[in-house]
Amino acid sequence: MSEVIITVRGEHETRIAPEEATVRLTVRAEGPERGAVVERIVGLSEPLRDDLAVRKAQGAVREWSSQSVSVWANRPWNDQGRQLALVHYASVELSATFTDFGALSLWITDAAARDGVQIDAVSWQLTPATRKATEADVAARAVSVAVDRANAYAAAIGLSTVTALEIADLGLLTDGGQPGPVPLARAAKAMMFATADAGAGPSMELHPEDILVTAGVEARFSAR
Image 1: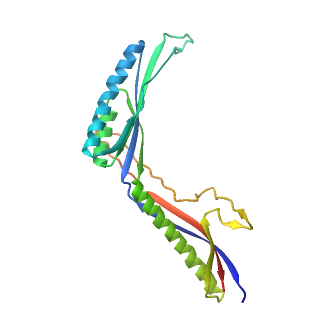
Image 2: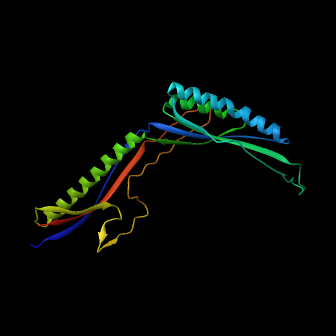
Image 3: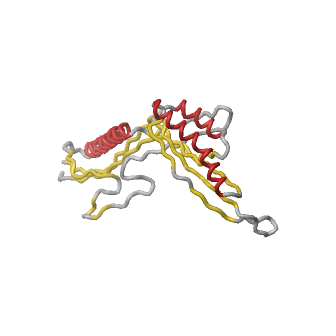
């Protein structure tokens, strides 16, 4: 039998517990006097910044940031269509990446109870080193799946020598010199995502899902 070209896809995924969590929150204040509103927003946000600085020094927080105060004003309308007196608003956004999830739960519980504080989101991730190693491992396993599949196809038609010609991320395998389409439901590199259940209560508990890391490759082989 002459040479046969085999084109296959290999995929692999793994789940791993998150190692860090980034919480984002907004502090807001409003009132009739601009100076008083600015003073109030500083008073509301300063304790949060001080607490995060302490937690970073203790090792529970890897990094944190705080944007400058945003101040604006407008004249709201009442239900009778009459424009009311000028109201001044101010806000500060903070974010912090926690490595201690117990400390994170306690901190969110305390912050959410403070006047003017809104918890916007909690996102979960791996450390950069773990993410890099996991992506490399999952990608290598996806290639192994493609190789095994090509060998199985070759054996099914009585061929035994399989040689790799091309290996690429999904959608990047050439076809007559033209790149193939990228599947909408997949990515050309490992994807990561996680969700959390941050239920309200006297003691807030966070239940992050494991992070799903996936990889897919397309490969072309010659078989003899």
